Structures are given as structure tokens and as C-alpha cells.
Image (tube, rainbow, N blue to C red; front, side):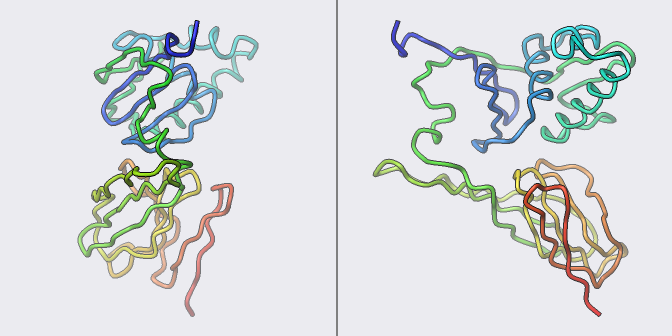
Length: 237
């Protein structure tokens, strides 16, 4: 049987698209990085949308050899990483609901279909090369505006670059500047000045409460380490 007859499962919810076979996660045409275990949790929940998937079921499917204590830490960490990537919140969930001591339930509407393997998913995948990790940030006085440029290397003549989408990243008092996107493209570090709470902050690209790292007007120019685990900054005298 040729490739044209083979299919791969594709699931969509909100702005996200998931290929359950290849382990790929996309948001608005941009590929997001998600580790193996969090992705397996997501895939399990998406296969049973609206239903409760118990922690014991997840343990048997994903962590069958883990002891109870190790599994408890592993599932909590996997759920936390999954929520961070999706921009979801445990307190006010819009994607993954936690049922204490029972399990989890995917609560957003899900659209699933089998897409032909030689149809690009998303379409820009076959028209362009690797998606760059960096975007451009436009800064406003009332809000930090994120301008996400999906920059691709053209691999076929006549292909057009995707249009630029400008959306508010976060609104807070003061003036935000010196933006730096994390290596995985999921977070932005920036400096906040002139407000009641100056310093260096990070925020998820998908939205959410910003995390304050420092508390000085003198801090500026945050820079991510290559592994995305540390942030360097400049400090004025």
C-alpha cells in the first residue's frame, strides 16, 4: 500500500493541532516543544475528551515500572510542564481539569480527523524549512505587544511567508522593554520600568501571570542561556 493510502491521526482544539502518531504539537502554525512524557499524557487525554483519565491509568500506560512515590512526582511534573506549554492553569483550567486524588479530564472541545500523510500538517510545513525560534516584540506603554514572526526558509518558488499576527502578551503598570524569547519559543523575558514593581520578568507566550525575577530599575537586557534554564541580565550602577 502506497503512502497516499496511509493516514495519521490529527487532533485539533482551540489554536492547537496535535499529531498523535508523530508526537508533534503546533499552535497557530508554530511548532511547540513538548517532552515525551507530557506529550503522552496529552495524547491519552485527547483520545478520551470529556472523560476522566485516572492517575492509575496514566501510571499503567506511561510509568508502569515506577514506584508509587516516583510516579507521583513524575505525573505532577508532567502535568505542570503540559499546562505551561498549553498556557493552561490548574486554578482556572480551560483545557485540563484536575479531579483531586482521581485523575484528569480534557474539557475543551476537540476536533479529530485522519489526514492523508502526504498532506502537510500544517500547510506551511511542506512549503518552508525549519521554523526559527525567535520572534519580534513590539512594546506599548500600556501593554507589551508580541509580534510573532514565523520565519521560514523557502524550499519552493512562489511560496509566501505567513502573515504577521500582533497580539497583547501581558498588561501591567510601567513600561516594558528589552524583550528576549526563550530558546524553545514558549516564554518571553523582559524588563519593566517606571511602575510600582520594576525588574526582570518572564511570561508565557500563550498568556498567563508574569513571573517577577528581580526587583530593581537598574536591571535590563535579559538574555536566555542556550538550554533555556538560566537568564543573564545587565545591571546599571
